[in-house]
Length: 442
Length: 99
Image (cartoon, rainbow over all chains, first blue to last red; front, side, top):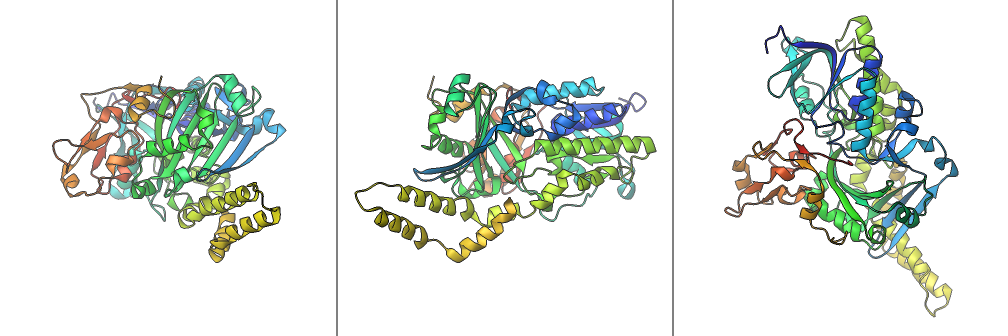
């Protein structure tokens, strides 16, 4: 294609996940001519998720929770430890979580949800090009004055644009190339990836509601740590969809490599734990999936803008890996911030890095960087205090089990033994130190 | 139907939808590094076991790119970064219906 025929638009978004779609939606609404390029056959076809916080969605699209393909709201949550043949669960919820807008916490099938969101972006005026691969950015100028001028598609075609929003997700090849080509500043640490594997298991609606004690319009998100994840920085989850449950295991890749375990075997060990298997009985596997998560947090964040470029969502490393596990909502918020910044840049006729400064300013002022900063130390705590999710919960579970183990002995004898066992091999000084550090995880 | 707790990885991958592209492998392994690689973590870290021991040469691995779930773990897990993983062609590869 010669350059005279080259298509020129205001903005090109690379990737049709929630970050890219929120950016496209915002830019289209602001009147920018916006093209979103998705490599899958449809937006969502490469995406995996489950637990979804909808504060940004519900502000971008009023009452979105009433129209979006939400499987169930999260009306209850639980955090559980799975020991060697023992388990302990903290289960909590609130009546208000079963009422609109359902605590802004939902369970979604991301392939279906993202496809719906893509439709909203299209209706706002964005053009969706699905089934097309961006292999690189298009640059103008040399080293010092190099700026992004569009994207190069597989097959050799190019798209010219004033601004490119990279929203490739965790596995972000174009973003990595662009960071090198533009010498973007790296974070203090390298990005640290985890991988999650998941099964979606079909079960009748009534069976799910019976097994998890749910009303028809309720759902539950369960988080697990413990023995199935021994030697890993990771854990498991179960989310209830309408007529299926999502069950998955997530662990840092570095710890998987060290442990020599296969992610699917980790998931199987989790599924077979006595505290889990009864949930799955009689189910039928509908889909098996795998996806990466950037878990490096605040210190792994690098420069997110250049002349003609903004990076959003998981490609930017904006996931909050604390107990909240908030990736999608942060991606959408960053997409919206990028979209608003692009609209400012268009109005000012300045798409340079300075002209796009509104993006990082919005991230700084908003919830995304505020939360990432708050949890800056979480990745270090997770790696540095492995006892937090294995030894200590195991000790507490054993204490409870011993306390309630019924024998012909007097209760005083049983209780004394339980407490002695608890205290005996507890590394007390280390325990205090770990607990003190762990407060930063909340 | 086999029990949900005893599905093999093959059973699981069979339930996931793909648009297979046999003619265009999107994964290339630089085997110069495999020869030097003792542990070969790719044989276990891949959720889809795309990498398997080469039956003809224990120093090498085979690649079943059609099973790839496109997570990207191999790009970080390979100690020599000897795995060149590219996005499959548009619309090809894994196609999640639930996600």
